[in-house]
Length: 249
Image 1 (cartoon, rainbow, N blue to C red):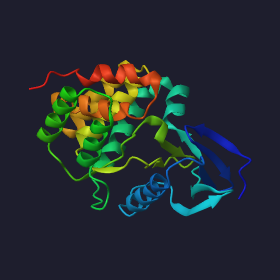
Image 2: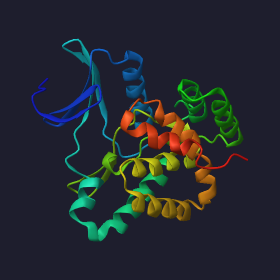
Image 3: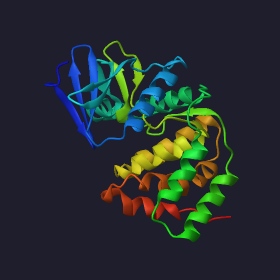
Image 4: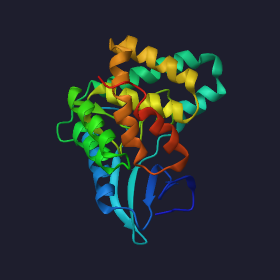
């Protein structure tokens, strides 16, 4: 297994290409259960029929856990929009359509989004009163069973050389309410300081899914609190500002 061709480095993981394969190599201290859960997510989402890179192997390389998947030759939507800004609206529409296709699928063995969000709220450093308010808000929001990507960004959509879209990085996949997934994507645009794009995305998702913006916004404090647990100091202040962005009812 050739690890010389490094194509990306992320927190606690290195992404390498070996011919027609991608190797995601995790650091020594990465949780085994998280690695195996990501592999299980990938396998379960594959079974829905969505266009994603196929999981080929779960292995160890030099004592480190690794996931081996198909390599998709192409460019991310982030790269395509950067090179062709005049077609940004067209690409955004494709992006939302892909997310709605994800939400049309069911995978009953995926972790329940409500359960994950509840655990994340408890893991925050927020005071007890705020945590109580967040739990109350979460319980008031409906628990659906739609496949949710959990980290749906333009960087996680690859358009192949044949023009076919593939969706990558299923580490955070759950089953739950599509509006929670949309709120997460909206926050991702904000974290990249792409506020105009965030607003366009929110309007387009609301229109295409026939979901009121106000309903998606109800998820923002919960999703922001959950995301703050990841421990990225550069994001923490902005995320915590969203925890109270919508008045509690």
